[in-house]
Image 1 (tube, helix red, strand yellow):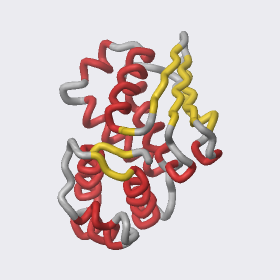
Image 2 (cartoon, rainbow, N blue to C red):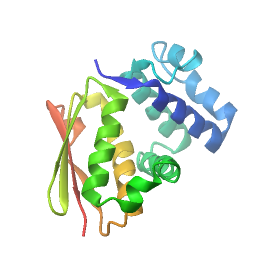
Image 3 (cartoon, rainbow, N blue to C red):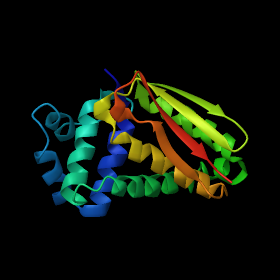
Image 4 (cartoon, rainbow, N blue to C red):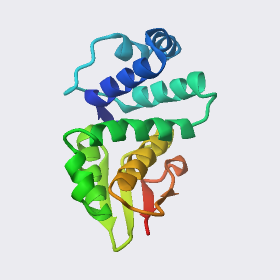
Length: 184
């Protein structure tokens, strides 16, 4: 079963607190299943691994409770997270990098956040296809976070006319999903 690094959970919890406050975070955690809730009520360590299914459930509850189920809000929230991350020490990667370089770097970084998921980028002149092997049908909400990360990073590096879509969606339940990105 795929797992996610604790640092992602910590960043997500911090973003919810900053956006909506401690009481909203508590409301989201309370709405989680008996399996997922203990993870978010206990100590979370940045270098430890946690259930990806529990994290996905957290995202689903967050979007249901704070965005009326509008998953696109998750893309916008992810864009804010990557913008903050890339305005710090990692700014150099997007300022001097080509879109292909940025896609390669983000794919490599994403690979360190997931255990049990293989990320395979194939980059051409003005297009990239990123294959994700290991995500399951129930992880489909991650398409919004992944798309938001790539969209904002590419915009920050100067890419124009960025288009992203999952040409093989996680919802299809295939052995892999595939994100297709193009830019002008």
